[in-house]
Image 1 (cartoon, one colour):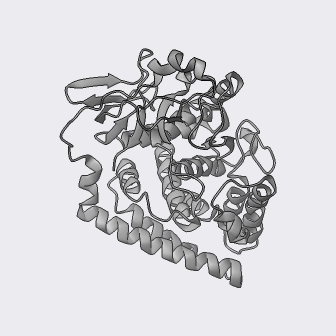
Image 2 (tube, rainbow, N blue to C red):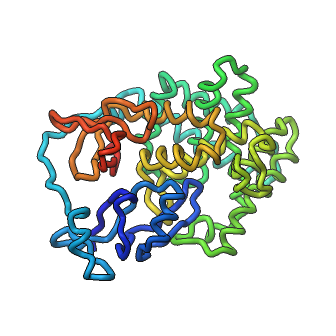
Length: 385
């Protein structure tokens, strides 16, 4: 059976969801196949989930409802609009992928990932000390391939689709944390920036102690399995705090990057003022990269969905001092990018709405859609790379 993406505000009782639905911190809200009820729809809205995919009939695009008597009432909402034919424009990201800069970035990135694998193995399996200088030089070499933070985000987009195991994720988080630090603290010293970058690199080192059959499970985790995964913060802290010449904040970040400012995180349920600032930065980078990357149990989410979730749920869960500058940078990276809309039309992001980053202005042919208008029920379905 096919699927169609609709706004949560247009969801109706008895529709059937086509995918597992997760919060920004990867907690399952409802599984695939759930039949929507009024209470479930309300919960989705409370979680800040503004669009969902629902099952539709492959032949006519209509939604098979559990209660057929309601089909006519909802048909107007879910009929698939006619797709416009338009000559595909070569977008900004394709130009980047063909550039010499990206070739150099890609090569440096892969080298950094390979070196990080070796480092994790030496530290965890052989109790060796961390050569902070060498691994930081690797990341700096990757960062230096970008002209600025937005350009780095552009190139990271082009890396999507690579095997996003712990090592790739760790390099991404290090680079994103570095970018946030430089954005929020323009006068940050190199020593402090190095500590923040190293914190991003090593935040998930504790996952080396979690069984592979759980980390790589192709499906939803059971509650006991999820509790095992949560122990990676304790393992990471224990591994890192025992190392010499390592700033104690690096171990603290490994322990606290799943804490949330409203006290809903783990392991301690800490609130904003109790959480190390570098851990608050890494929490944002970690969540953004995890949500926009493929995982064994789900496909990558559309970046604009993730940005929207941050705008709604993230305002209380993450430190807005770091979050808002990051969101502005993140959405700027999608300017001039081709996107597929929920109408099936293909357009290009041409303008950012600073009051609602997740809803930019999109040009389709000679028409312009301002997705931030209350009257607009159009959303970005996919970024085309």
